Image (tube, one colour):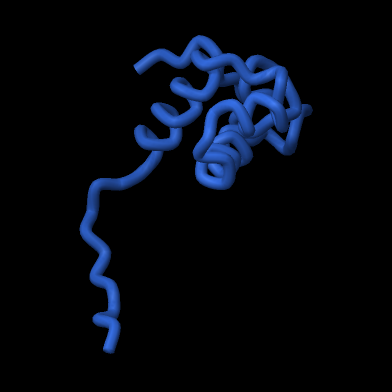
Length: 76
């Protein structure tokens, strides 16, 4: 899988995957999507983000996850 907008540079953000060489990590983008479900609010908070940046950051994060099943405790 190729990610054209995700970059990794050991000299930037401690080598964390970032969007287009910005100081904006994939983790921060995923967190922002969860925090601002309304894309207009997200765009207002992060005007440098483009729709394709968001899509690719989410795709990168999903590709980085393992498909194993983790048992969760049952709530009472």
